[in-house]
Length: 163
Figure 1: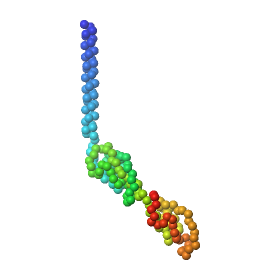
Figure 2: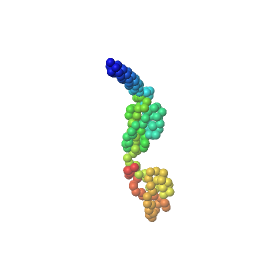
Figure 3: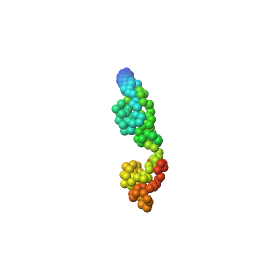
Figure 4: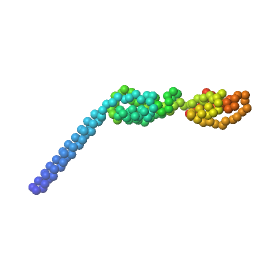
């Protein structure tokens, strides 16, 4: 008889503990499920096309969105580090915390050699140092043009140069 009472008490304790555990787990599951359904506030995706990537990142952060992985492509007209496409599209309503994936221009694949012919050497040097180019070897050749005037250049004007 004593054994039966002990077994019954032990059985009741484990039943109560199991019911308590299942109740706590059901409550936690309900909370997580409701949070997943709600998912935060809804915001409108801003238009980041044409913006520098740093400015686009700040604009997205202001709206509670994140900058996703960037795809980089060359583009003939869009300046380097500017956004040329985005996913999801602008004006779409999404939840906060969502990532926006930009396509970023890496600039033109080629630069065009400017013309320095008939310019003064010092003026051309200044223009070259302010651009992406470097001054190469300067050769002085007798010619009927005024002294320190450029009469030829390599690469020739208008030639595409890899950037």
